[in-house]
Image (cartoon, rainbow, N blue to C red; front, top):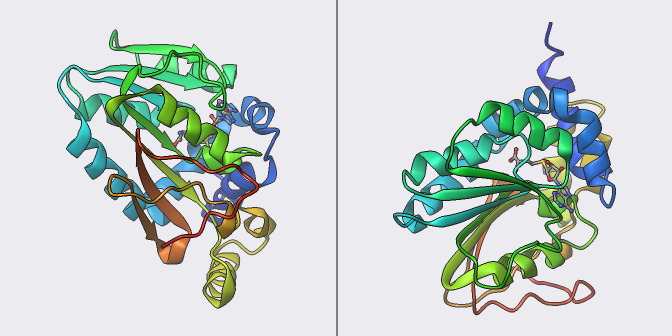
Length: 239
Ligand SMILES: C[S@@+](CC[C@H](N)C(=O)[O-])C[C@H]1O[C@@H](n2cnc3c(N)ncnc32)[C@H](O)[C@@H]1O
């Protein structure tokens, strides 16, 4: 029997927020139950952000595109990338062997290569990909910008990186939102340690974009080759 929705949501938020810096070990341990936890997040709270993410992917996917799913997990987003890119080649990279094993079991598709690697030190040369996509990964890292810098490094000059992350807005909006979610999942301590606003990896220029959903709980960002990702110790203000 599945645990109740609140319990699954709480477990998922715990995975996103509690294990920063120890992300891969936590995901190795949670791989078998991950999809059950993630579904409630993806289908409910993150649904508008994922709809926007998918629309951006559809907009930017070129025929024959070389695509990286950075932090592919159990491959649910990889599946969507393949749907949008009928002729694309997708590298599904993750640090967790257990998550990748589940992904490769689900996606038996010759267009996908599964690679174990670190999103903060991607094992690819500069200018390798037309599109880098990443969902719910950068907020699990000690230094989210190190991953986004790598996304920018490995995209081609005309390429694009699209990544979604969650964070708790600061100020009254954040406090209200936290309360609402705590009511939905009563013991949701992990929310208080989700990525705070100033840590959000983002560079604003004519090619980049950022859209927030659910009062800023979820964000979808787009960065291009020109984007300079600032060092982690510098504040990164949102527009
Ligand atoms: C919340 S899951 C998201 C998975 C997938 N993108 C999704 O949307 O379902 C975060 C994933 O990031 C991976 N991860 C965390 N730190 C990583 C790192 N430094 N390098 C590669 N993968 C990492 C974890 O193993 C996990 O599979």
